[in-house]
Image (tube, rainbow, N blue to C red; front, side, top):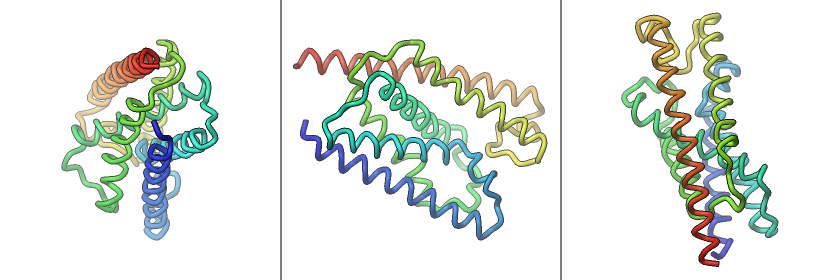
Length: 208
């Protein structure tokens, strides 16, 4: 595959995502939304992470220096997190109040970038096998994020997402149920991303 196409797509996608983050950050500053609140959104963190991964990946393609197992693990993590962002937003958060989120940023962060990183993983699969242990490590970050969000919400009254707010889901029992469901979904998604990546890698290797 000619690397120029993937390089351009990766850089353009990263640029669009970062432009969205910067735009919303300016709005957050102007409206006194709070920097900690702004950077507490999993969508924001995942888009920043995914954009960095795409840029680094583009540079690697240009220099023809592919990363090793550690890099593929990082890349896979970005796929899982952004795919999860896309799935959750387009299922659980449909119709939710987006506050000051601009429509074009919403499309880029919740639809475009998740789709691009998934396609990137499929079309340019990992060059080394991804272990099940690595896939389970991908789940650690969302677990820590969930604990942080629930505890910070209880302390400040600010919840990034309604399913972390006991007042919106029938108490902490509802929060626990949502978190358990999201954890299961994360595990399944991590296993799926690993499986697809490994299957595509073997397919590419067979083709030579």
